Image 1 (cartoon, rainbow, N blue to C red):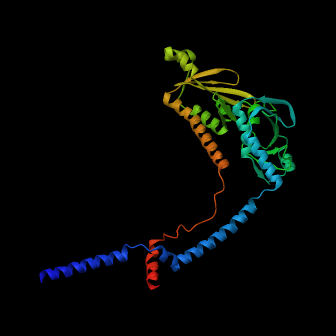
Image 2: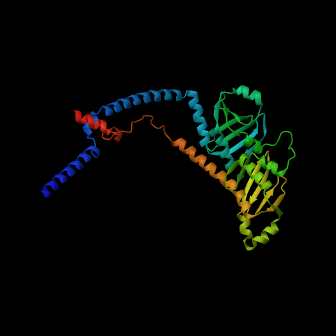
Image 3: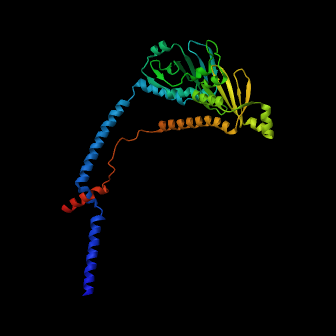
Length: 349
């Protein structure tokens, strides 16, 4: 009798377990999924989305289609940005007789970057920008294949390419090269050394790097306010001892170009020198940590430039991603939230 009762209990337990598993653990079959109303609605919605996206993509493509002139301008700017220059001539647009020739690779990179920065503007016509700002600078770029590009600079940031005479472009700080290499027309104003350094349009170093005014301002302001003492070469060499020659050779030199004049900054370890535009060099001594912070201003600028180049390369190599959307559900897998609905429909059929 006891055994019979136990068998009944075991049978009920087994039946209960099977029932629980059938209700909670079973996946819907492919046939049930495909025949469910939920799947059919999902498929219908997906088809509708594809149609809408196709229509939207057609509209976007139509808006982005360039005219022949726009395509020519785009190709022209891209060619300049990728070109390898061998010489750069900089002068006042109304008198190129006093122009300066530049053969510094670091400056070449800044010249070609103007094309990258150039955004077409409708704020002015070429005639209006000339009338408003008057003659500015003229840059003539010579590349290794003897191609010549002429760029007119107005008001610091507005440019007109001679080969694209009907367009005006905005390029931030386009006047930097002219500001760096051309003397003031009405004489050089009196100013303090650190003020001139802070006002420097561009800096180059011995590694071929080029920095614009933002970096010059940061460095000059930092040097002006840092805790430093005047020193001299003899003291520095005495402290360096046998390492003096090596230390001198490891100095990092930065040239500040300011309206046709140059100033130089050479950074060692706890020493640095500044050469004024009259050729006079002053030695300074500061804590090593303070000098490292000065070096870091340039390092951070290098990192920023590198990141910008990587981003630029990504943009050049990227292709337009497909705008087609999918529902994220396959024919054999659907959200568990709708499993009960599918199961019940499959049972009723």
